[in-house]
Each structure stands twice: as structure tokens, then as C-alpha cells.
Length: 396
Image 1 (cartoon, one colour):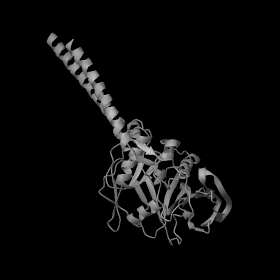
Image 2 (cartoon, helix red, strand yellow):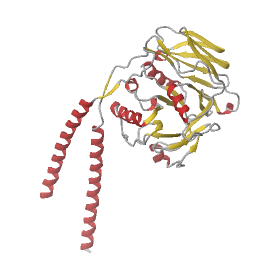
Image 3 (tube, rainbow, N blue to C red):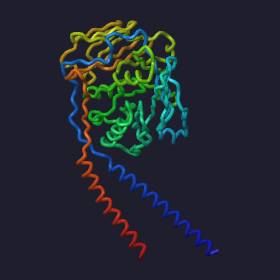
């Protein structure tokens, strides 16, 4: 009996030691992983400026546009842990054709595959599996990036993730950045091309204006959360992207999203089967910004630098505005009596005929190497001290 008790006690000690060894091993790994994140130097972000005015919209609109909705059913890791729900789609390919009006992104950290009538392939996935709200949507991905900082992220960690995603995907969208990125971070972060919003409230749109006001060209992408994820207690809004193309294929889809040659439409669920408002023209001639829509809006608003209201008209389907030298960018939003909203991507100033996006974030090779060296020395010294303490206890 005594022997059995001693054996049980021995096994308990072994299990406890293994547990603590695994715990401290994981802690050491995460510490090294976080400390080894690269450093970046940042140029001061500049507002759009110059004599050239860029419009993402064609001079002549196509006779028909392609309506496409992005439905996001992928759950964040925190949601999975709390709710215990997992929805996946491991089909080899879903078909993207002229009759398809929905891209249903059900996979998280796994590719969702689409193929069009030309046999061109589109790979999309949602990135981010940590306990933070940092999420990104990746279009035209070559591979899944598994790097993430699961417990907290500062500016350099967030820039590192975006930098890695931008190297492996054609387009990167920040999802609801107001939840997970501070204003200071959004001033400097670069390497993404889209701002993905799942709601159109004032605070969400302010984040978009913050990004634009600091010279970052980011087009708006409205996506739909599943009902189980939606926090909107009012009538469900249906968001669609209106691509200015006659025929849907993957190359044109990516080109439209990259260039901003589309507009976003938000409509109450009760009116989605009624004729929708449509943008008919947006031209800039002799510094005059002119737009026309197919039916009167209850209100048209032009928004500019720092989110300022530049002009507002009621009960009209046309608007003209003479751009001033101080207008760095202009975006338009329209409200309709049935609750629909229409959002245009911005027109903006730039220095040269060919627009080149600024990149305030620059990989700092010297600082990264120096800090990694310092951290390595400190960690080696720390592990030597810990090892000597355990060795001394073992001898005693």
C-alpha cells in the first residue's frame, strides 16, 4: 500500500513538472515571438495634394452594373470559444458567374475558392485568430498567413501583419478598424487597400475619413455579417457592392476593387426587392465635381478633409461642386426616403499623372537587428539565472 502511494506521488510530481515545463516553454516561445517582431520607421503621413485630380469612376458608365454582396459567416476565435459554433466550407471551388450575386466567406484562416466562366481562380480568406479584434480580409491570396499576435498588438505588430498579408495577397482589407486600431495607428499604417465596414454608423465612417485625411487611398467595402453576429437591433441592412462592369469575372472584380470603380449600397431588408438607386455619372471637368443618380435623394452630402461637410443638397438627383485648392479629397454619400444609402469612393488630388501611394511604414533593418540582438542576450542571461537556481535546488 505504501509502495502504491509513493508511486502515485511520483507520477503526480512528474505530471506537475511537465505542466510547468510546458507552461514556461510556451511563455518563453510567446515572449521571444513578440520581442522578435520587426520594427518599422514611419514617415510623417501627408494629406492628398497636387494639381491632378484622380477619379476612380469611368467617363462613360456601362449600361448595366454587377451587384455583388459579401456575406461574412466566419466567426472570430473568441466567438468560437464562447459560442462553440463553427461553420466551414471546404468545397474545392464555388462557381462565380453572371448569375451569382453573393460571395459567402465561411472559412476563417482557410481559403474560400471561387472560379469564373473563364476558369480563372479567386482565393479569399479572413485572417486573424487571436483574442483581439484585429481582422483582415484577403483577396487574391497565394497562401494563408498563419502569423498572428494573439494576445495584444501594438503598432509594429499590426504593421508586420499587414506587411505579410500584402506580400501574399492582391488586396487587403482592414475589417471594422475602429474596433481594433487607434487613431494614431491608422495615421501611420500602410499596405492595405480597402476599409471593410459591416455597418454605416457615424463612428465607422469617421475612421474611413481619418484614413483618407492622412493620404491613404482606401476604398470602401460594405460587407454583411450573419444575423447571429450582427449587433444591429434595428431592421437588418443589406449591403451590396455595385461593380461598374457589364460582365462579372474574377480579373475585373479584383481590378474594380483595387481601382475603386464601384459604389456601395446599403438598404433595409424590407426594400431590397424594389428598384434600387443607381449612380449614373460622376465626372470632374475644370475642377467641377458633378454627379447624377437615377432618382432623387432626400439628401446628398459631400465629405472632405478631416470629415468636414463640404456641401449638402436635399431632394435632388444631381449635384455640382467647384473643388477648391484646399479640397484634398471628396467622397459622396446619399440618403433616400426608403432608408437606402449610397456611398461613393473618393476622388483625390495627387502630384503626378500616375498616382503612387505613400508608404509611411518602412522596414527598419538596423533597429530590428539591434533590438533582436539585445533581446537575445537578455533572454540568454535570464535562462542562465533560472537554470542555476533550479540546479542549485536539485543539488540541495
